[in-house]
Image (cartoon, rainbow, N blue to C red):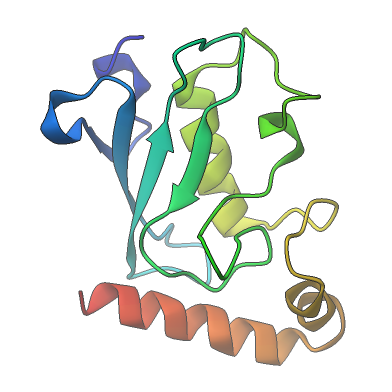
Length: 140
């Protein structure tokens, strides 16, 4: 794993306590997203048997997003599941996919059916809550 190569544009990656198994990523809300202006901290926990097993990825900063668990911040993406994980996946791909999710949520992989329902049928309510989470994240 190379830390310097794994930083998509605009993101900052660090290793808290110099622990190679825990990456913290500071993601600025993409300007073309509902999350513009916010800064979101993501934690990637890398198992001992990586790359054979997928890392655990979750938002530390609360965010209103249909692909993120409200309770624990875990990111719901099919390619991060044990069944779909590819050992060739890189940290850079993971981070870039998360940034892309902020721009365009994945409706096929949602943690919260209420959020998915809002996104699909009450877009204005969903957008209002997503923007509010970015505003709140910007104040921290």
